Length: 216
Image 1 (spheres, helix red, strand yellow):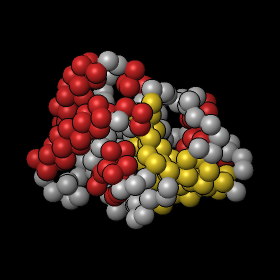
Image 2 (cartoon, rainbow, N blue to C red; image 1 turned 30 degrees about the horizontal axis):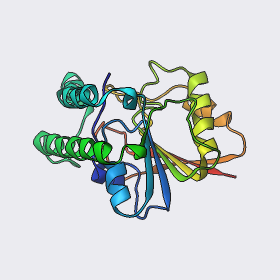
Image 3 (tube, rainbow, N blue to C red; image 1 turned 135 degrees about the vertical axis):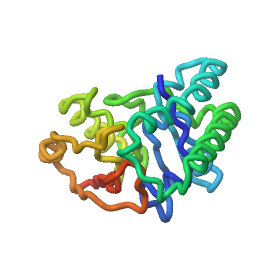
Image 4 (tube, helix red, strand yellow; image 1 turned 30 degrees about the vertical axis):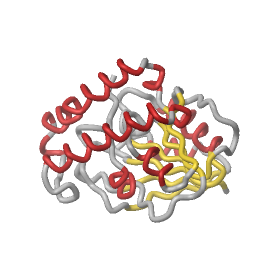
């Protein structure tokens, strides 16, 4: 299991966040520090991930082991990544270690913010959150999750949002290849307005766009 620890500043850039609403869900949040830092800013922030079923010691071990594992994906596909946002690999590693520390502190102090669950069925009521964020799951793992799964997952994200869903990135992990079924997935959504919007973040070459879904 890979439990990635992304930082709040990475989320700001990946999702082009300027101001957070009152309630936010980070779906498949892993070891991100986003929920901890959003809560500190007064937001009703909740994270959901299947990894939260793990016991505390096992979760700590999994988060720590995932730090070098994530770098391994980059090393295997060096030609598919650019460094202008991070500056250096060392800076990226620093952000991830800091995020992992913040996450582990917060889940120990406020476990109610961290809910075990997985797409395409989330344990939340309809329209529970104003904003739903999904980082590096949908489309990223299109080589493992098929089109039908993506349609079900998107409908579930829309169900638990009262306003907007943002998804990043829109390319396959590692290689950065486009997702062949993205257009047909979007065509299948009813009652939803969608937009592909550029963001001020790029790590995988060409992965600088997010999908924004809003209720029609």
